[in-house]
Amino acid sequence: MSKLKIAVQKSGRLHDDSMKILKDVGISIDNGRDQLKASAKNFPLEVFYLRNGDIPQYLRDGIVDAAIIGENVLIEKGQDIPIIEKLGFSSCRLSLAVPKNIQFKSLKDLQGKRIATSYPNTVQAFLNKNQIKANLHIINGSVEITPNIGLADAIVDIVSSGSTLFKNNLKEVDVLLQSEAVLAESPLISNESKNILNKLKFRFQSVLKGRQ
Ligand code: PRP
Ligand code: MG
Image (cartoon, rainbow, N blue to C red; front, side, top):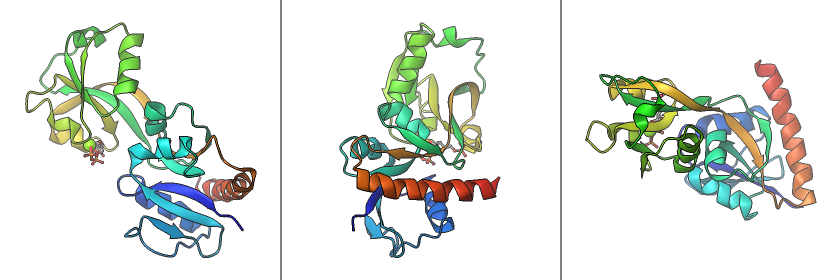
């Protein structure tokens, strides 16, 4: 019998809660994340532990059938990937922030400025919509440090508790989007895998109802 291949974040903000929802729906995974792949004992499922940013491409290519992933990553890199269920955990927002001591009146203040972000597509679309021309610096992590070291005038990054902004003397001045963990599906999923994914989705739905 075939197994559903599902991608889960290898490490980072979504990992623990993703494993928890699988556990809560009664699926027990054989081994830890030292291995990049693990099988469920009592459900036709294989879990692939992958880097967040790589997951949209794996879905697009049909290497995995489904994924538990942040909506923000799909908006940035996977607008063609269908979301089949919102999972209600790992809520966060993608926000614009500037140094605390800067007077920020409106988005027009960004004109000609340098913005550091790991979300260039989302930020560029936001700037276009607001008719602002700014220079994007693409950084993969620790984006909040860039204004302090003179690399950027503003940043766009994920905010959850707000503590990273606070520690780096930044203030949030606009929200580009809200995000949470979602269940996404490969556009190339087979009918057989789709049947298993539907079963998994129904289990998720009943656990999510119970959590409300
Ligand atoms: C994420 C994100 C923010 C921070 C937000 O970074 O990029 O920096 O968490 O969380 P907070 O509002 O609760 O502080 P992460 O620690 O995952 O590291 P990275 O940016 O280096 O990937
Ligand atoms: Mg960070």
